[in-house]
Image (tube, rainbow, N blue to C red):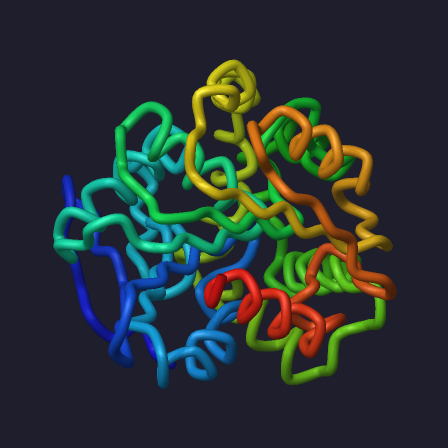
Length: 270
């Protein structure tokens, strides 16, 4: 499924796509990824649901203007505006990584209404941020100037580490492609430099107010965000369920596609 539609919001051009018919389902990607991590799952569900994909501003096919903020707060506002643009009434939301914090903030702070929320290996509560994240935050402009072949080597090593089983070459190439362009290289380091845990702390304080069905799903071998964080997140959300998928890392979409597809169907058909 492609994101070939455009929504203009506060100077940003947000790429999105929609397919199928039935109850609405919206997929949110994380960093440093794009809607591509969810495209196969959206295709599979489109027979029974109206599925929506989008690339956050600064990611994928969306605009990457250096003057535009790409923090959690900006993305939550963009997501709430996009839901309004789509005219959706309480969609099911499925989020991965950074998309977890964005979708949580959109409902907690921007008052977006969901039917349910499924959180897959998400960034949602502090602490967070790998040693690489901390390094980039100290040297964002220096890394902008790296020769492209060094930048690509960093990208490939970093993204590869998100998978437990190992990514196939075409999968890895697709995931790093948006960051290899002239606009993409500085955008990659910019989104890390603007990563701010204050939004995660604010999310954590509001989790007890959630009253929708929530499922937290985690890769048992997630090397980026340990399952202990997922278990703690689930305990903070009233009534949330929690499950772990064996032999899956942070990119469960690629490590355990059958298990993830099964969990999605079981959740959305509840």
